[in-house]
Length: 147
Image 1 (cartoon, rainbow, N blue to C red):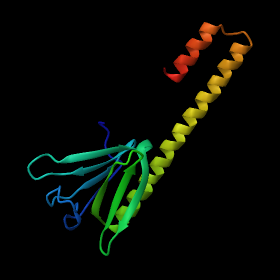
Image 2 (spheres, rainbow, N blue to C red):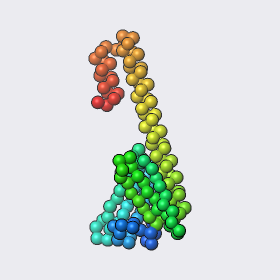
Image 3 (cartoon, rainbow, N blue to C red):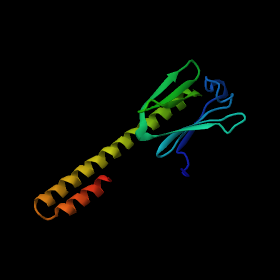
Image 4 (cartoon, rainbow, N blue to C red):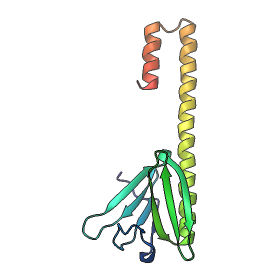
């Protein structure tokens, strides 16, 4: 994870985490090429960083307030994070960027699955045509499926 963020958004001090876990210091939302991170600094300790890879994202929600907005990123497994105190335009921009990257990640997964199916069909046809032995077919299939 040595790459730098594509874009970062810093929450205002007035709108920090409602749980009080960040001790009044601003949270930072960082959007990377392969993941989104929320850094919650601590007063005494280094704080925590929540990391979610795009294929794990179930939904991104904006919580609109009078002056500031919050952003929640929820995972397929029921986890996630929330960052409060973002400028409204920053929350909208962050949601748009994360949604775009999630869509791209799901598209890549779908392309990968489609490619595997096509390769399996080709292996099966070669095997049925007698151009691959049972052992060659089993080995190639096992290698393709990664098992």
